[in-house]
Length: 309
Image 1: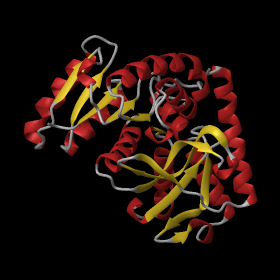
Image 2: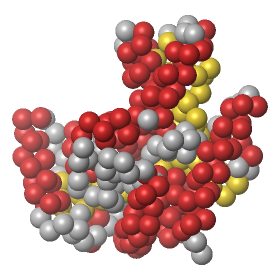
Image 3: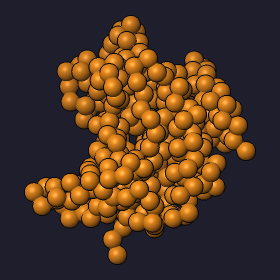
Image 4: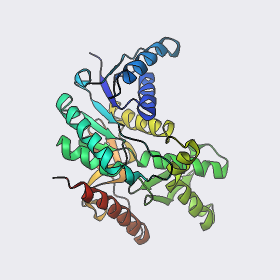
């Protein structure tokens, strides 16, 4: 019997994610969207891309969840996207209702799944999915730091004119303006960028990373990023489906780690077949700790507004 992954939301992020997962060829993909015909049409189109692209993944599309039953991983991308001038936080109430409804269906049809939340504001929506699903904490994780770190790596590689393959970077904290790019843990060929660049250059890279999503929204006018978010999701799904034990920055529920309790915040985790298998605690400076706690406080403000009971 073929393994199964569900992607909820067939828009730009969900559709791109489904296509990249289809190309992996290790599981069938169920695509779900409330818009009649959208998931069905995209799934059929992707199926027809299989012969020339040499994959045999079976894709299905629907407005319901019956065909998603038994999924090992469920990716939740559904929700409204940011528009110019809109912060991720502006999306809070609308997307909370959407994520709540989706999670109820997911928990009913795939009670053993690992949920990856992509909907914004990411950290708060992860909290919603965890609260509604009642899944153990290791089976709910948010995609944020992988994307933010990819952006940081891209900007560092552009600055040095090198391949991003030789650049490593870590971003912690909430997925928003208060994210914490860790410059001294970010390297080019193993050398920290803080030893290769003056402080003002490092700060410029950090600032551009924090505004990376808004920069793209500004160009697109009527939408937000989707290629990089989809690639980041797939990196996480690979880690789970292939039990890779990857160390990736993701939004996970903290229970005392880094001095934070009861919140989903971006931290480095070990991601494998069991989901969040370990939260990695790295030593932070006093300034980095303060920045992380400030970011967590911003997440808490949103979660408190949700009044989850």
